[in-house]
Each structure stands twice: as structure tokens, then as C-alpha cells.
Length: 427
Image (cartoon, rainbow, N blue to C red; front, side, top):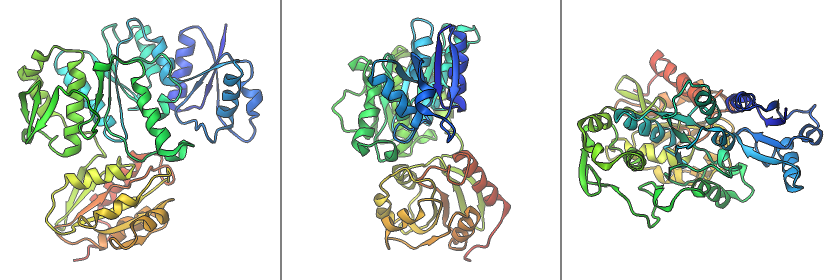
């Protein structure tokens, strides 16, 4: 039995191991550690599958695997590529990438397709690895008509070769994950564009905020969403009228159009599906209102562009009324754009690993306090600077893993504090 090596554990690593066994390979899973001799560990395996969490610049195992690739001794692919290759023919799927909005667009695309009777399932970076989907299809748990809609991160695109979605969308491109790429933002953008390498030109789709010269079948005029120039839905009747959610909806409808005849989109059940969709938790989620202060959990905002999108979607009373919690794990991003938000932000509580970098970037644009790595202190400090009519917003602009397991745990902690009535207001 031929062996394959899986680099890294977690959901993707375990899914790759499961799939390897299902297709007749003998998998060995390994992670970096001080006791691991990387060169010896990767020797002898013709196929190496990398989990997205394994960092090319800092992982000894990844670098050792690359040396074998460069010597023509092995193939190194991502778990996404591994899962795609194992999908039953004709291997049909849709794919979504971008700096922001991937999860909402993936969920929305599935929701809309399901309303039209298509058996769409979310996969990829959203939490269910494509290797698990492939296994479920091979084992009959999912039928052959299943259409995966795959949320794709730049990490998963780094080692693809055959990955060929029916259609794919690139929503937007902003500073994010720069610590992972030696070539900085330029390399990050090149990796993102790899999603299109095997997609027909007419199905290479882009978000509304991107200025690339592409023909769009879905447009927005005023508060109306149009398909091929024909009004489809009044966005004021939905929860998707904010600029970032308009982009997500337009992208989702573009994807649907690549697998469903346009006429079906004007059926009442499709319109109802648009009107009833609610974005998931931790994205501009109002979790409490106390003493006239509205508490909003936007923990999924893990880069500056996402924070600005959140601010633009909130009501603007004409003067700063947002007390914000900023900070977390540093991904080498450019935080300078946050300084331009002084017309919305009245105070910032800074916490976590890169709080000093954020402080330097915002300068004296708006008042801020250094709260160390104490999230409770950051919450209470923010609350003391809020008054009735203000919004207290967790929109950190950073990843969470310096202090939390993930952005969900961070958002849950904020929600717990907001609902518990801790701290004191500035009334």
C-alpha cells in the first residue's frame, strides 16, 4: 500500500487522513515539533498533503518537503487539492475567495441554491474540509448530485494543480496574512488569483468593489438588485443592504447563475430565500442593548478592511459614536487605514499581541487605551468611555489566537460580558 504524508493536524489534517484511507493510501500524519527531524520525517513519501495551518515560511516540515519537490522526489499539494482530486466525476463545485465576506457568500450561495432544489453543501475554509465531502460522496453519505460550495483561503490555494471549479468568485483584496508571504501583499494577491487558473473566463467572477473590466450579470442600482438588467429584489426588504452584504449577495447570485437557468431566479421561492437570509454569528451581531448603549459583536473582522466595512454599515449620527475594541494576533497587516475613521470612532480599547502596532498606526486620530492582554480590562475600559446613544463594537482587525482559540470564542466572551452587565458606563 502506497504511503502519503499529511503535514499538520486539525480538521484538514484529519480529513486528509480519512480520505487517504478511503482511496487506498496509507497515511502518516505529522506536525512540527522540537523533537522532529524534518528532513528524515518527509523522506520516502511520494505524496505529501499540507494542512492550511502549516506555514511555508516557518515550518521546517514544509521547507523539507519543498526541497524534495524541487529535487523531483515528491509532490506537495494542499488538502483542498487532495479533496478535489478524489471527488467523484464530474467533480462539480463552486468556489469563493477574497479577503472579506467569504463565509457569508458561501452560506448565502448554498441557501439560494437549496431554495431552488439544488443539493448544495458548504465546504472548505468554512469548517468542513473538502476531503470530508469527497469521503462522504464516495461512501454514499452524500449523493452524486451534491454541489459543494467551497470557501477557499489563500492558504489552501498555495499548492493546487487540478482544482477546477465550475465558477469562482474573488470578492475583494485587502491587506491580510502578510506574515505568511515573503513577497508581501503582491504575493498574497497572486495566490488569491490562483483560484481562476482552471476556470473558464466567463465564469471568473469578481466582487462589486473590484474595478477589473468584467461583464456583470448582477448589478445594484439604488436599493435594487438586478439580474441581466431586470429588477430581482428590493434590498431594503432584506438584511443584506449594507455595502459589504450587497457585494456578498451579488457574488452569490452570480454563482447561482452559473449552475441554474436565469428564469428560475425570478421564482417567488428565490426572492423569499434572499429576503429571509440572515448572516451568521460574530459578524455585526447585535448581542445586547443596555443603558442606551448597543453592543455589537463583529469578532469575525480579522483585518482592517473588514473593520472599515463594519463602520460603513452602521448608522452615522454625524459625530463619533463608536467605542471599539481593537487588537489580537499580528498577521503583518497595514493598520494605517484605521486612522481615517476618526469621524466614526470616539475611543478605542487596544488589547492583544499587536496593540502597540495599532496604536502607532492610529497616532492621535482618536483616543485609545493600552489594555495589555486582558480582554476583560479592554471591555470595561471601552464601556467606561461609552454613553447612551453610543455603539460598543468588537471589531478587532486581527486574528484571535494570541488570546483565544478562535474568533468565535472571542466573540462569545464579548457577548457574555455585554449581557452580564459588567463594568460601569460613562453616564
